[in-house]
Image 1 (cartoon, helix red, strand yellow):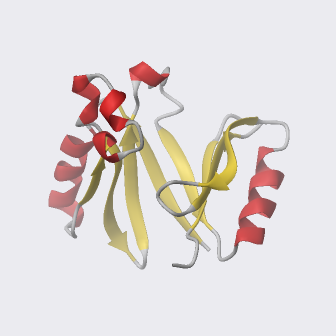
Image 2 (tube, one colour):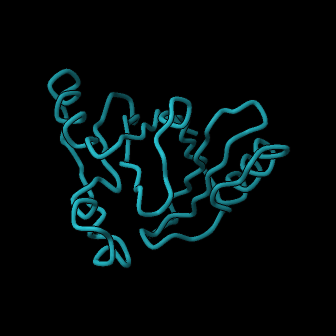
Amino acid sequence: MTLNPYLNFNGNAEEAFRFYQTVFGGELFIQKMSDSPHGENLPDHEKDYAMHVAIPIGNGQYLMASDCLDSMGHQLNMGNNNYISVTPDSRDEADRIFNGLSAGGTVEMPMADMFWGDYFGSFVDKFGVCWMINFSNPK
């Protein structure tokens, strides 16, 4: 299992990660909101926002992030700008961790197969900690 820090930004994730890249090095991965399903329906200023950005930080771990979309009702607040992203070794383990940690909390996205090919869900636990569970389905 791998744990990765996941950050949220208010439209400047790419800028932040270009800065972080000067410290950590590595290849920068950026996927834009315009590349997502229905991305063409976003307001023009949000189409260039980062849906997912990542840089390697060592030993198979990544610093990752995305931009919040005001048009989708997302608001960046201190507290939801940091997630712990868990990458379990199996789909069953993903469900076990999701169900266990989300008990008594607030589910944002239930575990489901996503358009990018992974099995993913997110929630805020009963202590206010934000989590993402992401199992990479075998290709």
